[in-house]
Image (cartoon, rainbow, N blue to C red; front, side):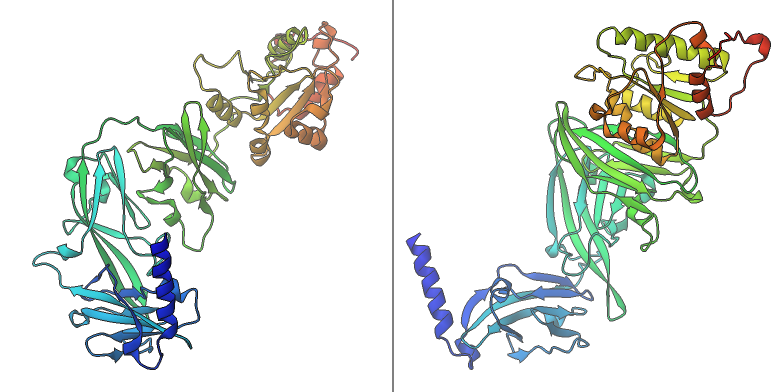
Length: 507
């Protein structure tokens, strides 16, 4: 620690004692270890290696070619010029190879450090110079992503589309093994044959002239022990009905043992390039994750603020950078509904209320709305198939229903074992998709303990109260209760009077 302190003290003393007028007396920080490479005809930026000092002090910056002590011009139209702390070669030529001093001065002291520039021609018969390569060594996995390195000072790599070559030949993008997203290349179904030299080409515009920036990557694949595959939760090649002009949001969900990057693509290209650059109609959200008992659930949203005609029957893929597993969603126009109403109710009720709830949902509703009024209902516990995933079941069948009926009672089980509250949370989708919701109260409800979704629906449209009577008179569709329900239901194809067995009552 004392040694570091002495060195630091000596460094400060040398900085403050040297005169400014003579460059020869500047504190010399030697030569930067990293050589700056470029191919002939490509742009090259060299940032002053004393940038950390420059940002903390009021310095002027001067660049000088070492072998001639030639001051580099600040004229931005010149092929080689100084742009504040950056030395720019637009483009680089063989004669530019050499050493360049970055000199910092202020009223007190002077410091200098040298950067080495090396400009190369391509090797004979190749599209690159092998000595400038970047080394990427990866273990074998289902898929992997190669990034085009050291671009941040030239372009915004998130808004730039690179081209990729392997051994100077274009990649076969029709194979769907390759996915190009921004300046990244994802290779799926990875094998040892994917080892090789990859060249990325990034367009760069300066003063109206377009150049290519290239990076050579020597990519080597090594064997790796078996690793658990990510599990795609959603999508799973889903066909989704959506109205023309409607907005829709879907989430890619992948379960894995670690945090992974997810991205949406169309036709092998990032979804960000699906629309024009100025059109934000289709938006890919940020990547997120949450820990579960089965692993880490990674997710990323895809949002269409407005579905247009060209979006139908196209496949939008969710991809992960650690697996070749890809699934898609596709949109189609609605072609009618299967059900007149989807019934949501808490199946795990407290005490005797459980019996009354089951009787009302499984006996009374079908007796009146189906048999007597000709409606078709979907009721969980009656119409679902064993083994169906609850989330998919709810989502798909609500989408196939013209109405949603929610049955309410006060005394739920504490753990809401049937995920009733989760189903209620679907109200966001119900409102967004303009599906009418009908609330039925099995008793006088205390809404203070109800979910916010129920409170909202109650305040917006009210509810119909069931008087708790299982009499023959109460099963007549002509009572005030059933008239209120039928008023909010869509038109139904009613059977003939001979097929009906109405129970007449005075209300």
